[in-house]
Amino acid sequence: MKYALQILLGSFSTQERNAGKDEVIGRLEEVFKLLPVEHVFFGWYTDKDINREIIDFIHNHGKKAWLWIPVFSESPASVDSDRQIGYLSAGLDAGEKIRMRDYNFCCPSSEKNRDIVYNLYMEHFSDVGFDGIFLDKIRQPGFSDGLERALGCFCPRCKEHYKKYDVDVELLVEKVVNKPNILLPVSYSGCKYSFADNDVNNYYIAKAACISEGIISITNRFKDIGLKVGLDTFAPVISWFVGQDILKLAKHVDFIKPMIYRTVNLPAGIPYEVAAIVQCIPNVEAKARLCNLLGVDEISSDDSAKRQYMDMADIGCDIYPGFEIFNVNDRDPTDTSYATTQAALYSELGAKQTVLSYTLMGDTMRNIKALSTLPFNNWS
Image (tube, rainbow, N blue to C red; front, side, top):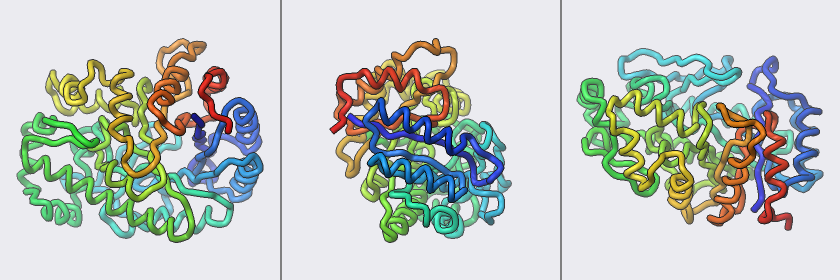
């Protein structure tokens, strides 16, 4: 098995940087000696000279360089976008949860918004030598900011889209506000949930169709200019709630990286996102229901990770599961067992690569060194 690396350099603002060029190249050089790395995803700092030097270093070592860039969130303040509108007909702003990470979302049905990421690429990144593009934030918000944000956009354009899928929009909102328990799914198959209430069920289908339409359109534009395309998605246990139809998207890209983050209490982490679902759907059986539908005892267990990965196997593109390698929560910082256990699990399941997430520039080298001792690393 080989590895892909993920590095957050900073934001679109030239004032907001996570790491300098020399620091990044030094860390890459150290890791390249220890692990069989094939891909490096980094972004989305816009300094062309810095990006070129990092890409040249990556290419000189026989690796591929991918631009990591967000789609429906975190666009620069200078870009005009159609912001998401909640079901109360007000704009939804969440503010920043993590330094330099803006969790405000724009409307996925807006053609203007679908143009943003391509236009940013052409302006800032098209002439520096990236081999592919790694699209992040290909979703609507989750439950972590409350029920209204979790339901996504209800602008007039999106409302008309939902009605095409036989959703009674006004009735849907009334039902969810008065009885949020109807958002508990009743079945799970193919990385999707289904729901007992027809309006809820059709709403999630419509929501995913809107995002898929936008992402496929964006993907095709990048393919037309010769770029490979990969996608960052939530883990299957959460992805349907945020509008990601993984099986459909897989038919249009080179790989998908599901964020099967089992320990981190941050956005996209399974414990974080499931806790938010439980908070918004006040039902004592909410977490147990999700476990039952996946056929596992614990939502963040090895068995859960295996089930979610296998649900994505043979879906039309490569699957590179991502797991966190920075030290989080109260885990002993000298304990490397989580990283090595995850790598061993995905190697056993037949993954070609795993993505060491989500930023190599954190406190990661102890885990990197532990991974280098594993017998299944494939240097060929």
